[in-house]
Amino acid sequence: MWGGRRFETSLGRALGPGENYAESWEICDHGADQSVVCRGPLAGATLGELVAGDGLELLGRNHPRSRFPLIAKFLDARQTLSVQVHPNDAQAARLNPPDSGKTETWIVLEAEAEALVYAGLKPGVDRPTLESAVREGRCADCLHSFHPQAGDCVFLPAGTVHSLGAGLLAAEIQQSSDTTFRLFDWNRLGLDGKPRPLHIEQGLKAVNYETGRINPQLAQAADRAGASRLVACDKFVLDRLTFDAPREIGGDDRCHILIILEGSLLVEGDPALTPMSRGGTALLPACLGRVRLIPQKRVIALDAFLPD
Ligand SMILES: [Zn+2]
Image (tube, rainbow, N blue to C red; front, side, top):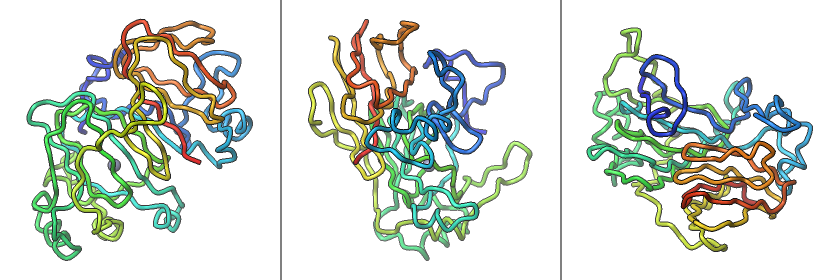
């Protein structure tokens, strides 16, 4: 109920009619939700089939996995999302059916001037304080918030209370999980005129009350040229690449998720030689080795991969 049309106006995707396009799942292997190889000899295969049948070629040193461990998405928040929290791995394993925990990170692509990110609790907010605020419809009193800029990266470990505010377009890298506990829906009604279900008990239990305020990540130098490290956690590593001359990626026996934010490039060896531009996403399997990226216009891209 919170999406818009910016996948078309900003990311160049063709959308159908209607005003409500909220999430684009770019790379995904989660149950029936499957990315499909779009071209080449494996065209038509799902990501889940590749993980099961060609896991070593795909995942390299991170093989074997029961499913592809990350999801890459775009999010278009025309309205503010509900206030949510995701469980960690141990909590999610006890669900029926079991799921992964969900640590996630947002990279802001566009931010309207008044847009807000809500991330983490204000100092001193403990469980009783949050619980009474949630039950009294004033959850926002407990939430830390800030006005993000395009380019900001917001890292949200599992257990962090968060909401993406109205007016933001973001890319998201997350653990492959679809478990969300909705704590508060801003006293709104759903599309059917009824309040959407909340998961207050489970949500309050999943909150890590030690997390505190979350502000944009400070980029660190990465261990390779033209790259800055936005996130390094035990679930994924995320670098931002900026380059205007050909460069290589991969060759480290890992797969890489490549998301183009600005400019356009050709991936050497792509049989269709189709340029990738803003909003384009590719999964480069480990077996490709070092892959040469040839920019046509100065490129800003995200490179997400699994840690050891
Ligand atoms: Zn979330």
